[in-house]
Length: 111
Ligand code: HEM
Image (cartoon, rainbow, N blue to C red; front, side):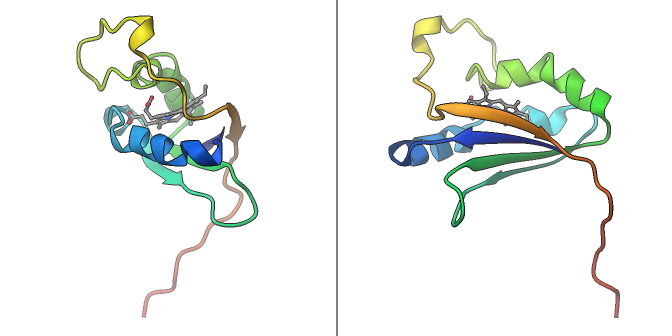
């Protein structure tokens, strides 16, 4: 899985969540995409986590080199053309990409 860690000043939290509420929604149609969650910190950290799960590293890289960049330009999946000046000030002041692979997993026993 790929987790983008976003440093978000307290005053920018609402604006970050609104940005995600209005996100492009393009990731859902990307080949090999399996799961997305925006995780709001409650305790232990102030960082937000953008959790994504992919079928393969290659699927993630394909998304990163195309749809991801459009989704982060605020184009909302529509035709582009917005000038640099129209991009709102970023809500996050920093970001770090974490990569993990699953070593073990479990789900509840049936019955
Ligand atoms: C410079 C670093 C990054 C920042 C500041 C950032 C911040 C944001 C913000 C504010 C949004 C909401 C849409 C928008 O307003 O653009 C968004 C969307 C998203 N971000 Fe990032 N992001 C960064 C890089 C990444 C990376 C490396 C990943 C990989 C896990 C990622 C995963 C996502 C996903 C899955 C969405 C939703 C896209 C969609 O709906 O199609 N972001 N990001």
